[in-house]
Amino acid sequence: LEPKEEFDHSSLAVDVMRPRRSDPALAVLTQESMTVEEVETLVESTHYSGFPVVVSQESQRLVGFVLRRDLLISIDNARKRQEGVVGASHVLFTDHTPAAVAPEAPPPLRLRGILDLSPFTVTDHTPMDITVDIFRKLGLRQCLVTHNGRLLGIITKKDILKHMAQMSNRDPESILFN
Ligand code: ADP
Image (cartoon, rainbow, N blue to C red; front, side, top):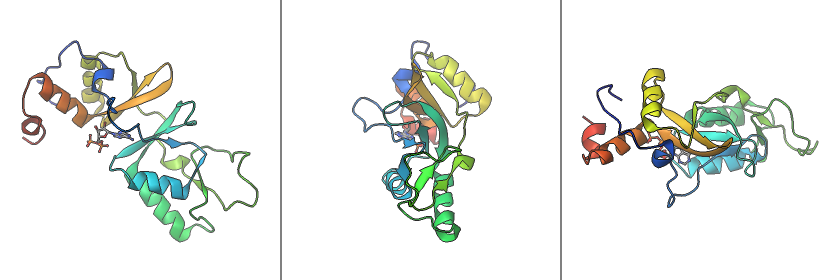
């Protein structure tokens, strides 16, 4: 994001974030209720670079953000080396073991270590000029969007570039790849 590129002052985070109304829902992981197999299926069914982790599907309260690459490497390593980790193992982004996991269940896969516990977030009504300024100053690749503490969406650097291009009616490709 070049400092010279101006951002229109009327756009809000909610105007730029994904998913758009017509898109599939945000792909999120839950902190302690998914199995290794479920996580693998979700990750492999998308090409996203990262996934927000939430307390539960119902609460949509943000716990952190995990990169696709780190998830795949950790799962692969665990399946190869970690005693007993199988598809049915629970993936835990928490410190504790949830009570719901049966004692005879296979050993869980603990992934708190690869979780970014403080991903950058803005609220849905944050003006985009402020958001862009933060992206530039902190060198962000993505930021999460919340409303009343619930996760709503995600904005990547490319989303911002595309939005800028649309606003100025330029061909997005010419901005992204020049
Ligand atoms: P980039 O925007 O650099 O291509 P991604 O591949 O991560 O980065 O994202 C592609 C698109 O999907 C972007 O529009 C982004 O906002 C959106 N996106 C990213 N992560 C998710 C996710 N976990 N669930 C839904 N949409 C996502």
